[in-house]
Image 1 (cartoon, rainbow, N blue to C red):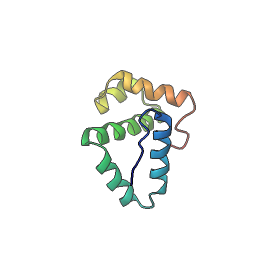
Image 2: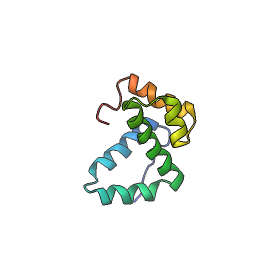
Image 3: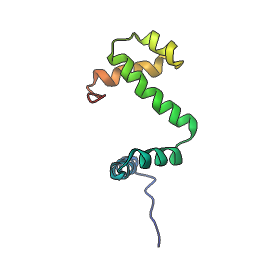
Length: 91
């Protein structure tokens, strides 16, 4: 069986990833998948990004978020911009 990978269409690849994740039924399945597809550093970075959003939505200043999580201010600012765009309403 030949599998065609679509490396030239990033949006389609992202859609495929989202569709695959949406079919996972349990926290254990999601956890196993994430640990299998991501490096420990990538898992840490994604977890940090979620924490950044949560802290910003609680009103914690960007500089404090940056120092607390030990990430760059640019990373925190990106989270703040996404919140301003209306993203993360369910976080």
